[in-house]
Image (cartoon, rainbow, N blue to C red; front, side, top):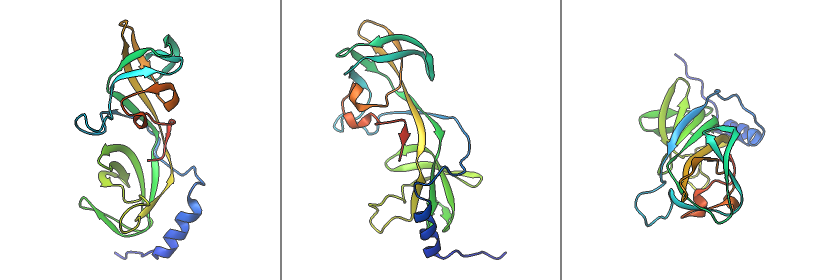
Length: 197
């Protein structure tokens, strides 16, 4: 079998031309996974627990159902946020431009990866052709030896969190604006539903 080699310079030019010009072909999915605290222990201050509403915020009766508002949180109202769920509606798209070996999996210049889920510690679950594997974020610009690929399309996800208020009311909120909520670490709350990874 003959392996066709694509010059790395050609792949890099293709990536530069494609970046920000999506949408790209990406598998349709509604992938739900639980988002736990991003780190262990209390020293990092990133997690669920005691939050506070900074503005009026709708609380929905059911996850992913914005047609039924159960009640509204008032500014200053405290709530207990429980481990929530991320719904990946469109995976992020990464194009490889250097030969790379990750977790017994070999990627070649030109390979396209679909980012399905953040696992933790800068590791992600990705789909490559017909298989799913875990990899480190090799496309990060700050990588010590330079990135081995590039993110050409951001993923789209929704984060839903079950909550309970001090008065005993419960429901679901969709955090997507840091200005609306205050938590142990403000940067744990995403700025929008579209996640760059």
